[in-house]
Image (tube, one colour):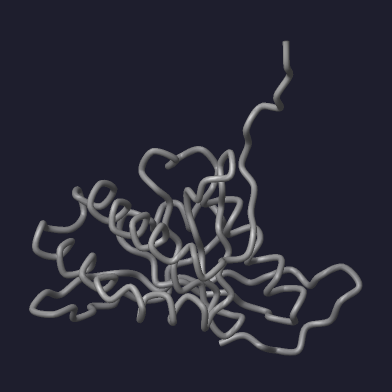
Length: 174
């Protein structure tokens, strides 16, 4: 009889070999989790932004991108741009609601605060807005973004971060 630890969520930095999996998580998340808030045409335009996986990978590599894993398999990712803006947060629908998104945002908040950022922002999709509100983000403004021939709405939200213990903040916020 062999014992095996229960699989659990873990986190690590993005690797170049992750890009195809992260693009698939991105697509699946949009296709399956946003249908109540966005039309099929809007979702198709949004998903198409990952069609060029090389460009998608360059974007993720140019930001601080963390990957949530479950039993070693990627189940979500989040990217921090300019140490003050959550640029992407996507979790595979099969893992939605199991803590991967919260774990990723917690890590980005801690990293940003430790680097002196006072305020973190995100342009939250309509379906992600309540997730960020529960985490203390406050709505600042509504936005309309053009993707191809479609227009999508989101909300810019922000959260004041606590200073890192023993650290100081340099005003790296917005």
